[in-house]
Image (cartoon, rainbow, N blue to C red; front, side, top):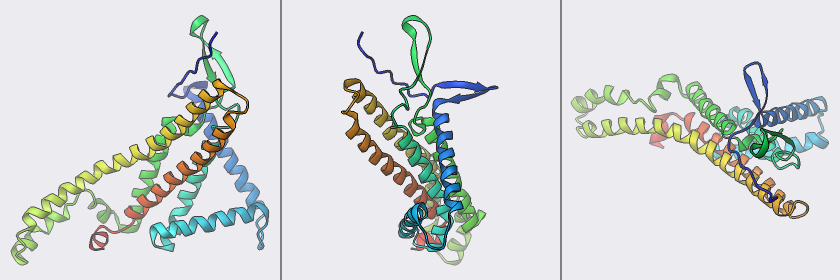
Length: 274
């Protein structure tokens, strides 16, 4: 009987807790969280004035991260505010990306159904290969950018980035006092540009979620196809390739999140003048 590669975009349910469905990708997410908690506790218990071992590695990573953040935000103050969000986000995505290529993830499970309709359901599946996970990460990230925007520029200023009521409020002054009659044309155009930026916020969610999901899911499909051809030595080079892809995709997601936070935390008028 020929081997067939079954591809399921949706995560499969493993068990239920009451009415709550636990999927194989959710299990992987829990494992990633447990790994992060264990690493955090291990580092926290061995913090020393002179860093050694794991603490030394973490401090080196943090120094590189803060340098990269400074080059994006242009401000150490902003970098220190954003990194406690962006760095754990990067770690969570990276661990999930790498968990998806570990042997056994996606290949150990059970069959459900009967006869010719039996379907293989793996116990674990890479969380970032599930669109629900990447969509949730993207939505939370965009919401956090708006929270920073309100905190750092004020609610009214942040609101006017999208619904620019102030453009109409200043029309009488510009037209009757400053004699800027072009404002009758320019201000309504700028108002509608602000409305278009609202659409851009939804585009951010789509861009962040689909990019991460598409690359990681495609990698899992590739690994499954390669394993069907020859399961012993052939997949090894592709596993290293997927490790690099996992780092790159986690870095892209985190950098974009940092860019969005930096943009939202900049006053609209100041950014326009700049």
